Length: 363
Image 1 (spheres, one colour):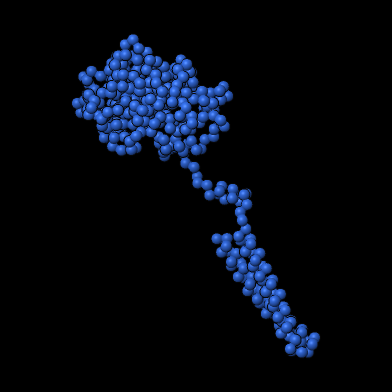
Image 2 (tube, one colour; image 1 turned 45 degrees about the horizontal axis):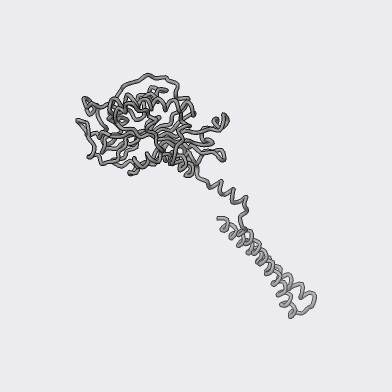
């Protein structure tokens, strides 16, 4: 647009100059005639004046062109980038890892620290997002991925902070079908008389800070058929330890689920309305921030370092065993499940924390 405006201005100036030249030529010719009384001397004088006028016009046009094509300064480029920068959106219209990526780009982190973006707990599924067999279900305080073919979630994930350990709700026990599962979730009849517990993946006790949060854990989409001694024994003990870690570290990112490493048809199943696969193993992975000091902890969106730990436990009583006996690296859980945990971490931090674990950090 700027070039167009300069072009019009140049054309207008040219017309004025031409008119001035014509008048000037008449004046010059008349003056020369009066001085010499000779008409033959008029053309030469006129030519000289025309040449001067042409030089003046060419110089003005050259100056105008130079201004139009003047290279941008660093200040000009910064101003234009600021004016053209797209408006950033918040997470209200987004969910899961999409929201996490947006928020990650809008937060400021301490140089040298490991960034802990929102949504860090959400793993990446090997299947297509929201396909028939991979439906992401977002609750207010946790999320899960429902696998229709197995009639249960393959992961259930949440962030638990120290402040959320303040208990405000008792156990609601309102087990019910999940109406948001498009293919239909497991039903109460599927579990009734099966001999298996409706085992929580995201624990009810971790959501005791709110009655609504507590109630949302009782959707059957968050349940998996667990052997009674397992659910009420070593699994429950590990869940309680997670709350201790949330208090110790300030917060933890938790993902739990069954290991579904075979086709659904290869598992034994329960159910009247549906076939719910009975997993042989369950996993739990955790990531905790390791703050340098109290000041570092005041900026919870990053930490000096991180620690990660995984568990793979058999769906049985595990008599005489402690959950520590089943501790593994997060990489090992990824190999068994096909999931990618904590993918929003910087690659270097993710690789280092998931490849091995230091049990002394957690004990």
